[in-house]
Image 1 (cartoon, rainbow, N blue to C red):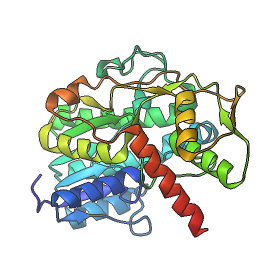
Image 2 (cartoon, rainbow, N blue to C red):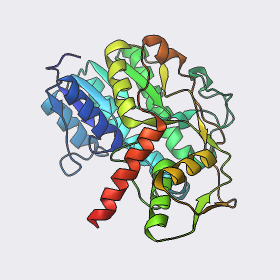
Image 3 (cartoon, rainbow, N blue to C red):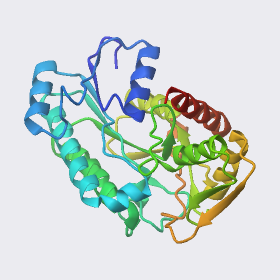
Image 4 (cartoon, rainbow, N blue to C red):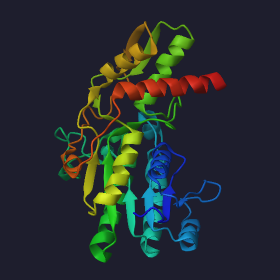
Length: 311
């Protein structure tokens, strides 16, 4: 990418899209295209076609998606599949039809089989059943990957497919039901201190392990790949190390200053028990993360405290 290239970020207000926009601007890219939901409905095929025909972007980052935690995925499997398919199909096909030089389709580690060997290699895709609690979202992402790969195979379309691990960071949601696990725990323990509670309830047994990457590290990785990687093959993006949810909860409790007890609700699902990515390929290209988990959690605690103060 050149600094004057026209770059469209689909989903620029979300956690991932806003981080990409911030990092592009920091690096000196000066021709960034964005559109709010009231200006462009990515689920609307005609609106997306018109946008691409009018603006003719050179590069596209597809960061828009319907996302949420375990409960949201369990409650709305149809929405997670159908809405994401519409968004992906519209943006990917319009990119192809309007001669976009390169498209970045941002996937998710949930695409891999539930019982995949650890750490998870890229070639494990479609080697087994998916985790049922987020199957709809995973199927949408897998379809998006294949759509881009088939366009590459059949027509030579330039698409890359980075697969991030669990993400967190600025602009993440602290919603009590629909948030991701790290931001959800930050809210739980911060609220407990604010309300003088002596116990925090957490879903599951705590034995499940997750790999957590700060979204600012992801944005650097994705821009790095746009400039250094030209294959439609999926490529994992993460740290290559994980932590149990129990250890994460205890770490967040400590960093918030919570002194009470943690009650594990074992009637609730753990989700996929292990989901650590093999990041050999991206490391061999020369990329590594910079933000530690403790630094990132402290930042999230401060962000949530500021949100509470505004209420």
